[in-house]
Length: 166
Image (tube, rainbow, N blue to C red; front, side, top):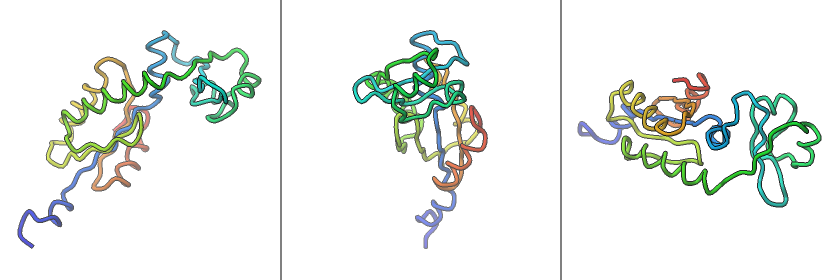
């Protein structure tokens, strides 16, 4: 194969897996000035009402995602219950995706708070610093980043140093 052919490019590929930790909670804390460490439960705002996510303090009390909200209130009556704002999350996620694509044109969004980016053409350390700065522009998100030669290993790498690790 000639130099620069697909097999050469695959061998030098660098894939970034990026996860915003506690995406929903971080947004709600910023909007509502909820203190860190509080027992927060974000729930689906309509019937059937269920838990979407919870803070680690609420998790420690036994509250789990997809739990009926009545059951969560029985377990944690003094928790702070916040209706999910999916329109707001969609808007912020779209802004984050746009910022990522400014830096990494080949970006694949997996959900509101998780992406894969091809960073093969960039200096790794410099790129990661730029990404962290761009994504924390308005909201102080905790990011976990993993870089490897494929998506699977990049995702494993991002799980090794969470939260806010590389």
